Amino acid sequence: MLSVDNVPGATSYEWYVDGVLKATTIRPSYNLPMNGNVSCGNSYYFGVVAAGNCGNSLQPYIIAEMPPCEFPYTVSPNPSSDNVRIEINNSEMAKANTKKSAEIQEVELYDKMGLIKRKQKFGKGQTAATISVVALPNDVYTLRIFDGKIWQSCKIIIQH
Image 1 (cartoon, rainbow, N blue to C red):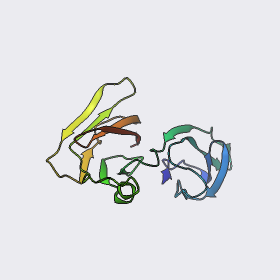
Image 2 (cartoon, helix red, strand yellow):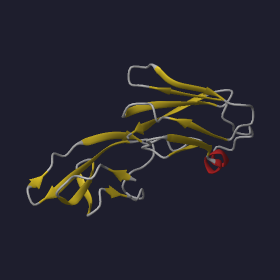
Image 3 (tube, rainbow, N blue to C red):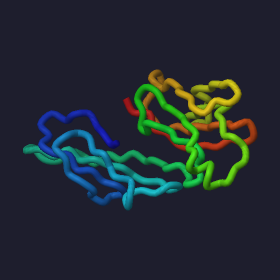
Image 4 (cartoon, rainbow, N blue to C red):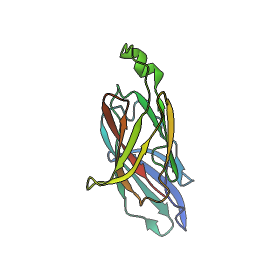
């Protein structure tokens, strides 16, 4: 889901992925279909133009990195404004033919400067977790998840 604040006087919103127009809507939000538009493991620039009788706005972009295809967790919503939920992605675990039961033992959230902004530990056997991001400023963060043996990471966007 892509969304922006309502722009006064806007009659439509044009949604772009890597500079290519994907849709025009009358609402300041758009549910971008993943199929054929973005794929796992790649980085994308998402942009929007607010159009109205007085002209068009600038086209701001935000970069988003999709987690790798074999990433064993589902992280949502992304972007988020209040809470981020992390769950074991059982289909990816099955593809990896892992005999270990997946769990979430620890979660860390880093800013662009590499500073830890959130750190949370969980009990053994935890398969889902929620962390609050409501107090963090808008930005792109690195989310690291520890399963007891290895750390895996993905990018998340905080957008209030």
